[in-house]
Length: 409
Image (cartoon, rainbow, N blue to C red; front, side, top):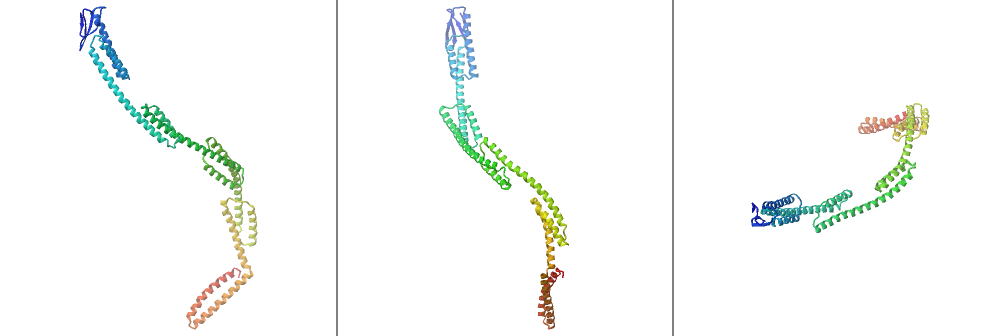
């Protein structure tokens, strides 16, 4: 008979293994010595040790499911319980029991993790739904549309919830996207209608602008072009494929008109600048007439200068007051000389002036005599009154004498 700490072979070749519950028959060995029998069944035991070790490692380091792990444990437990190996089978059972506890703990851990992940996924999806519902009311069409597309990608990356919860949240999410798409579609349909209306309005403006481009009625046409530009801005934008072409035609028509006007105005400005130069020369010639010493010669010279002045065209508007003012000053000086000559040589006016002077002189002489008489009679009050009256008549007489001198008298 042969034996070791965990098993023995009796005389009949029966192999036993020692357990906490006593010896258990492992099998019968007739092919060799008892030592060989024990060695064979000890190798079977070592094979179980290796398999249990591998399973323990899989449980600890892989995502082996609890169901598969339990099936593997049960399979190994059957082999241990069958007692077809010699070794510490109770230790193997203890390891399998501990492994069961580990698998159960990991199953509970994974269950809690899945619950936590599901809760996080629920909150994440609820947040996506809330944001989508807020975006559904936005008028920022491009930004909101891009954000909604990004939310869909985020949604696809989240784990599914239970069917009922997932379907309810997806329905709200999808409804928000549909509501936004419907509003955006209505907005752009309205925008298309507005742009079509703008296109028709701008077609009319372009037609009128092109019709006016050849006009030479510079002022009214330029004013109308300004009105057309205001109407253009008020019309809004047409479709992109039409807007640039319409603008180029509209602007081109204006450019034709304003280029022609600028050319004409440049020519006119050059002509008026030359006119100004000529009129300044005439004004200088007229100013040499002053002071007037020979009225007849002065009138003839000024008439000649004025005829040449009238033959010259317009001058720049801002220069006109100054140059015309110089001519008017000469003209006024000649007119004043004429008035003075007329007063000096007019017989009727001279007679009237002499008559008035004589009357005032007689009145002054009479008042002086009356004042002397009043003083002689001691009537000073009357004398004072007559002197005040004399002062007024004397002033009138002095003025009349001055006017008479203008007649050469």
